[in-house]
Image (cartoon, rainbow, N blue to C red):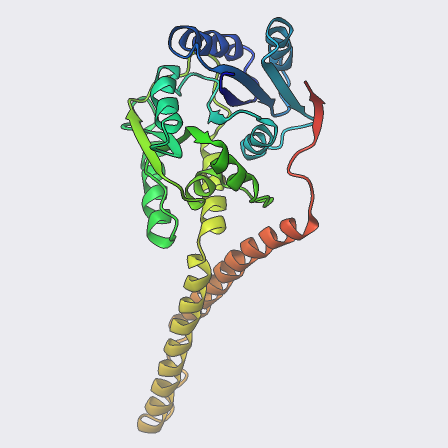
Length: 311
């Protein structure tokens, strides 16, 4: 009996790319991976176009095509979780439907895992040609920052596109946290991991749903999920502010004793100090509040997604 490769494909308003993706992957399957049984899991994240209808057409003609349709938009992280939850293959691949993840790399990736040499074979982009410069700048900044403040190293330019063994998938699924950052989770579980570099490619059709601010929010979630550095920073800022206050108090007392009547001077500087300290306090409250909000969402124990249809 041949081994099975499950392919997880999160989609959101991708009616144009779904058939193109299926065709491209099937070509690789028929020419280079004929010894494997394929299982497709399309995870629709509450699309408001004809994405589900396009997937249904594929499912009607191919019994190996399955899908989960969410009741609303829950985000890509929920889509990845749902795909991993439903995948039954001996090996599991995660791919983007826009073909920015080259299907041509699948044979090499699968061979690396199936041989037992690696538990995970992932991919990373060599360059970000074609992206807006500001997006490239902040992306590179994020990787440098999170790798500096977190013990969990994330390969720069890493994509979600990877092939994993069943053991790795089971380890990932044991982490049922509500606030998910898959790039961090994929590396946190450990195992033997290898990354293949490839040139950035453009989408085959449609438009990305990832705006700049969505990426910023996603980056913040990643930092909160895998680093306590912001909380430590708040403590350091508080200590520095306390030391400055003590030094300032000593200075005021000494100046008053040495130059009587001078304590009323410096009103503008006092206002600046008060505004500065107020800003530090609000920043600190915001950072602490972000961690508390994550705890709040976790303790509610809400489901990561709600499925409207599963086939």
